[in-house]
Image 1: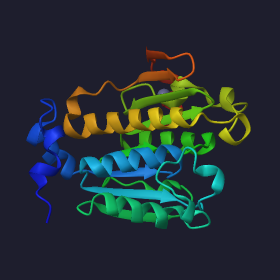
Image 2: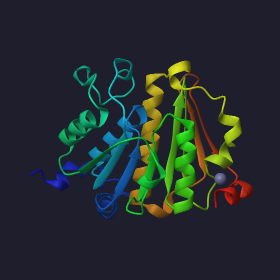
Image 3: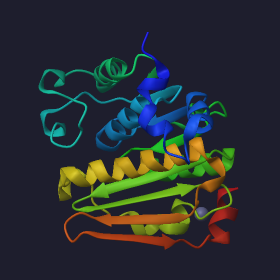
Length: 241
Ligand SMILES: [Zn+2]
């Protein structure tokens, strides 16, 4: 048995985390929706940091074109179910974490109060809106994340903050491209996924300190980093109810 104190020694020394925060993290259960690029980083970072339990949802197999940005997968995983491959890699990284897999497309019935936090790691906007709407309805906090080309965006959302519909009205997003068509800089995936994992770590270890409704925008070609406070749109909220 690995000595827990030693294993997490460096993060325990962060004064904002400490043993109290680490204990909270070990008692937390997160749902990560999608284990592509963002989900690879989010899950590996949270598992290595010692989250208690993580549930992963996906339905795809690993493809060769995934390997440049979906960092947990290796050549021998190509053609294998992503969840089977990722669970093996994650469990090898930290055997203390309980890892559950759900091999299906996202649907509203998957959400439940047993999750302390939901992390949206999908690359599909209709699904993102559904996750946003369901989390708002159920009062479950979630972390939106998206990236394409050289830009990434991340926002922590709770029922009192601006949500995805406040940020981008649904009709404006119809013309947004998928990474398949516009390409993805592999490093923006790492940055965006790490920002989602960082927000999750902060919320799970120090829940009162998170700024919900603040959009983080990063560009890893021009090296811009912006923080934007998004206004909550009351009308959108009424529609969501
Ligand atoms: Zn909203």
